[in-house]
Image (cartoon, rainbow, N blue to C red; front, side):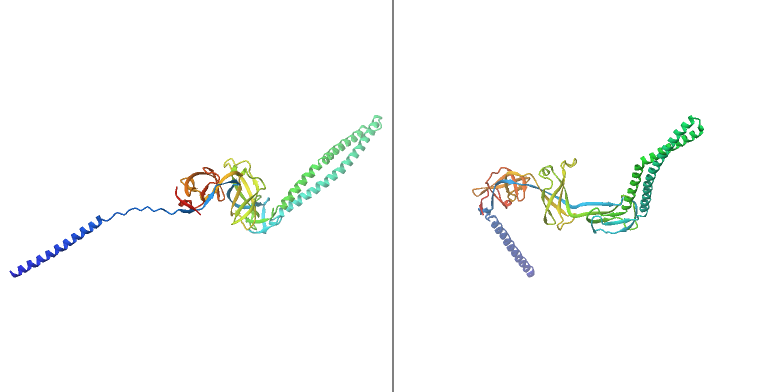
Length: 397
């Protein structure tokens, strides 16, 4: 009995402690909730921003010379595909790609034996024809003299026959001789009359054979550098087959296609500025197409520059001058802010900037032409415009 009473007392003490702890937890939660509920709300405090310092620029008016920037590649002023004009076997190759050659310098040779024999043959035929002409002229003279004598003999015999002093057969024989001599004179006369034509024909054949013989040697057409070689010793080449390419890199050309607005301000011999390999070059306009291409409606022009530490294939930027524009309003390009395809500037009035839309014209170096909404002398923010807002207070540096 005593144990049961003791156990009940211990159980009551535990329940009492649990109740105290629960009460403390509930009171703590209520206090925390009250603190959170009674917490003061933050108040937004407006602060006045300090005026931003800005650089200004004045809207200017002056005449300008705009220019078009066009990019092309440098290429040699001359490029030739050197071909053999006759067929044959290559027996000599004297150059390699990169070899510098002078005009007339031998590049390759063909076996010329057959062409030499042909030349000697037609040379002999020409000599024979020339000697034959001289012979025929002498024979014609002799035949004409002989014919004259025979005709006189015919007349004498005719008189004798009329007197019955000789037989008719003798006169007939003389007449036959006259006919034969007349035929010989006609033949020789034809041969002499056509001799000049025959000599010219033989001379033409001789000249062709001579040229074909010289064509077995391939020589440089101009001073330049061998770029490619396509045949080697022992190869057989056909007539008009490309043997090598030769380029002239003493100067370079830039091939460009320009709009009609650009071509209107250009003329042959005009000097233009060219930039290549990080340096400025003096370019000369050496060719221009006045009638535009029917497909692209552009004009082909060629600008020549000196070989001043540049190479073929390099990119070159050409600055083509356009027609001059007078009394243009100009502002720095750094003063323009572009938003959604529109352009704006910040005009300064009483240290307050006004965001103003403008219409831009052509850009000229670091400036741009303004077409409307600005007047001469207005002050605008010159740079760092992206950080400004409309009606913002500023101070001028």
